[in-house]
Image 1 (cartoon, rainbow, N blue to C red):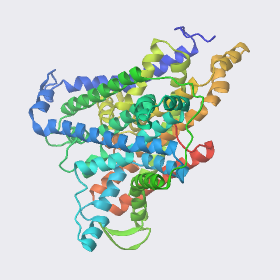
Image 2 (image 1 turned 60 degrees about the vertical axis):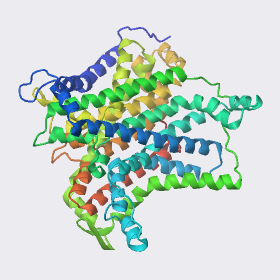
Image 3 (image 1 turned 90 degrees about the vertical axis):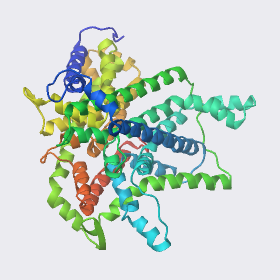
Image 4 (image 1 turned 90 degrees about the horizontal axis):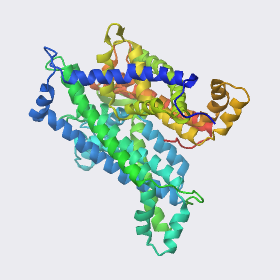
Length: 551
């Protein structure tokens, strides 16, 4: 048997090296953030004045409650859309199911700020849908800006997280349990809430947690369409970069409050999951059933409407990128002028995006596989701590992560601010958990006997890993890597804090061009990002033969 107790071997050395990297680039910056939050801007003395200032002014604490408000609403809406969709797709014969699932995944992978920008093009004050309804039918609709717009954009982008987690749980559901409850006289509705829901609840809550953390920490969407509706990420950014009245120490204090909220929600979610987890024998799975005509119409209308609305922003952006523009105004005619101008002004950001993402993904590939292996196969106190620490970035805002890295590495002996290295480090830290989780999940399904046989035949532990274990893990690794890759090229929250003129990425350029009212250039760059995501997913589906991505 491979030893599980703590003993010094090659994997212990690997664990120590990785843990050192985690300490330097994650735990140390978080410690600096914590210390900074308790310092005064002028003297640097330890004080609670930053927190006192926050709670004493409505301008500040209202942003906190706004974040909670919009996040709670988005999580509830995503649950209301994602869970029923997953259940209907699993239990009913839906036409075009595979194509719909691909569209759902693509809509989830699209950059959130691009979704916000596209809804501005459609429902903004000069949006084409707004003008069409007003000019043709005399109908005036509500503003896309503020709470309603933020909730709309977040919900249509994040509901796939709940859908995918719930679909995965329903795919593993043992139908013999449902049949047994039916034979005992349980009403179908009661069976749904007393048997099905408790069995899939851990997965549903895992999806809800990711929705919560994404909505709570996103910067781009509320920055573009929030206007007077202030939320914490935007407030932190304004305080950190503000030339007048801004304070890095106050921004650190605000960041600490965001971290504490997300950690508290994470702990609460884990507590419920640990109390409500059940095991199943998986003897038989749910088989989709043919629906009656009326039910079929209702189900298809619901699913197709949600998928249409969630993919509409991408279509809008692509179409808009070929329209002629004059600043913020779209004029008659179609051309490639937007793309020509985009490459002339921001072509280097396209190169930066792919270069940084490729380097980050290669680093993630090596580190995530090693972390997953030691966490599953070499269990001890150190590997458990490593597993917990590397999951932390999932619940930390990108804006907060950018601030922590900038404060930690803004002076010698490790001066990284203003370089491409600090961006790549941020990408790796923020997006590595996807690959770690998917790699760990597949590794837990693999028998350890094959590795034991390899070692008994004379292979070293490292040889066994690279020749035996790594190839068997590869399906999970690739699923995680595609998520990491797409998330990295979309990254804005951390990039907007860390970039300089020469290290800007496409997401930063889109953000800048929107605020410069150069909608044509922003549409062209957004289309390049969107097409990159679609091509990446199609290559993944073709290469692996899969129709979905495991979360």
